[in-house]
Length: 76
Image (cartoon, helix red, strand yellow):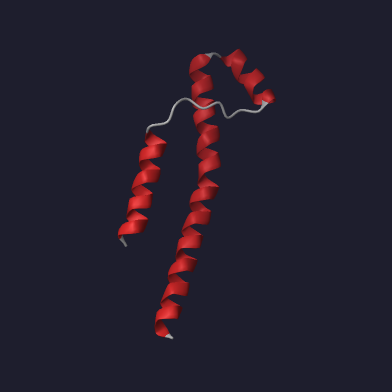
């Protein structure tokens, strides 16, 4: 139980202490450049948020699958 919590702790720490990332396609970058710097930061944060959600969902499903397999192995 300590290892998964430690990995989660490291993931949270790494996500909190990141530098600015530019995660925009060329079309989005042109559109946002016309909007100004403040909306551009919000747009970039929204893109990163939308990118993060599928990884969380896959992680939860994978963790539940791992728990289920571990429980089956202990029963045998």
